[in-house]
Image: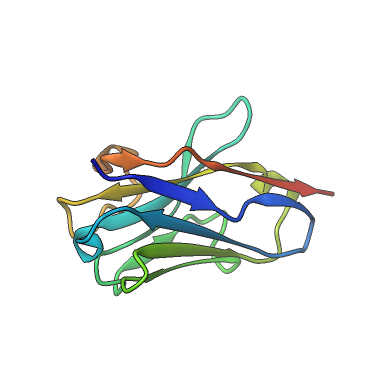
Length: 125
């Protein structure tokens, strides 16, 4: 069983930056495609960003493109989500997801087998 743990959330003002981290408890981290999703109160969970095993393939949701950047460090078994110019509408619980089967999981949440407990990001106006 792989554990996925997010960290780095918090309360910030609009325009600020945060960096989320997600660590996976596996010795074969390089075999995992990883993704970030978020869920705001009363809304469906939505895709934020995804990155392939190697890190060479990645994408971001249109709503965060140009502000958020996903990256990974396979030596640290960790992926990151650098969030810049945060907006109140970015307020949500952010979840990290992992999958050991596909090279690249993309934006479909059903492609991911393992999920973290989430970290809260709150952006005040």
